[in-house]
Image 1 (cartoon, rainbow, N blue to C red):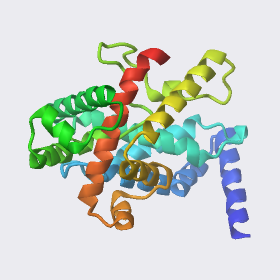
Image 2 (cartoon, rainbow, N blue to C red):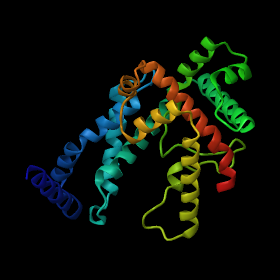
Image 3 (cartoon, helix red, strand yellow):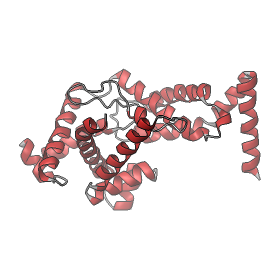
Image 4 (cartoon, rainbow, N blue to C red):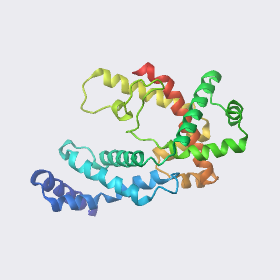
Amino acid sequence: MLAKQQKVNLDSLWVRYKENKDLQAREALILSYASLVKYVAGRLAIGLPNNVQRDDLLSYGVFGLMEALERFDYQRGIKFETYAISRIRGSIWDGLRAMDWVPYSVRQKAKELEKVYARLEFQLGRSATDEEVCNAMNLSPSQFQRLLTETGATSILSLDEQLGGENGDHEGLRLMDVIQDPQAKDPNTVAEYAEMKAMLAEAIDKLPERERLVIALYYYEGLTLKEIGQVLGVTESRISQMHSKAILRLRGRLSRAKKKIF
């Protein structure tokens, strides 16, 4: 009964704000959905370096929430939470990019590691082992682990992240741009989305079992890296490294598939 009453109140706020430009209703909506900002910021904060303040993430997220309120069409029957989370995540991601929180040298290391994974797994036809990656990069196991830790912060994924290829192909294209719009009628868009989705699913399916489980628990079940570590009985730092390796493998595989899609 309480949940039903809350929904009625939110519906009333949406009508007052969208139809009458009621600023008090707008403030009430922001307060009602503020927990979405905390949720997204909390998940993105995992693995970020200490120089990134949580308050900054929350500030960027609030801008995303406000943008979502402005653009949301409450009459379409879509859940606002689903729409807003994407906007909030994108706003935080934009804020992080603007503050250049990852040193250039770390970004370069991440790109090099991604290319090594892509090359090895193309040659081997399977997931490359840590030993094979170490040999390819002339690294000791401890150096490889440190490299994963350093580049872990670059493995944040966002629908706003650009998908430009290695040669600058499709520069400026975002993953969001290939996600299907429910209102879209263009069959090419539908086909591209379906192919992209199938390739991503195939790439995830080829991940080593433990890395595939980490991806499922983090992105589909909404667990934090610390919670996943408790489930698998390993440390949070170890889960962070597994997550980084999984993302690097996926990026490497998808980078080879992009030219076939676009």
